[in-house]
Length: 143
View 1 (tube, rainbow, N blue to C red):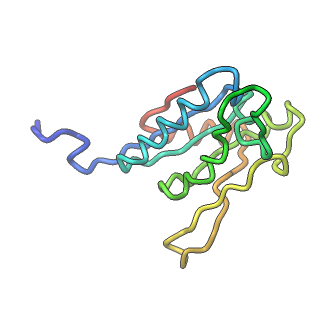
View 2: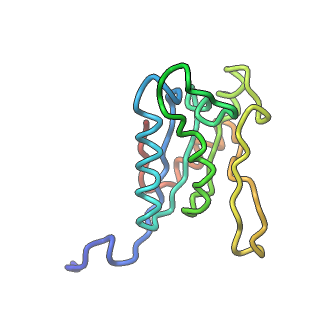
């Protein structure tokens, strides 16, 4: 058994942060985003999943002025700078809430392996595909 801490040994874990709550009214969405940024800062393989009311976190044009809280939704656009480029959105959750991909923010990243081409971070997946994504993770945290 090694005396080297796991984080110092270069082992990368696959973390999936599952977002199920609406963006406002609780602290869950903001806390999830903060934990995602921490995981990315430690160079882990970070992905996010948005299902149930969590899909509302990515709706474009959010205005929080009337509820007196800071609008943190623009922060999602910065995730690519932290190499967080896999945002899975469950199709069924969108449909159940009367939403489509057109209702979501455009979140892009620059793919350094493809001559810095801009690519979308949001990937629409059905429940079966999302279950497969979840099965491939080392750690799943639900918010």
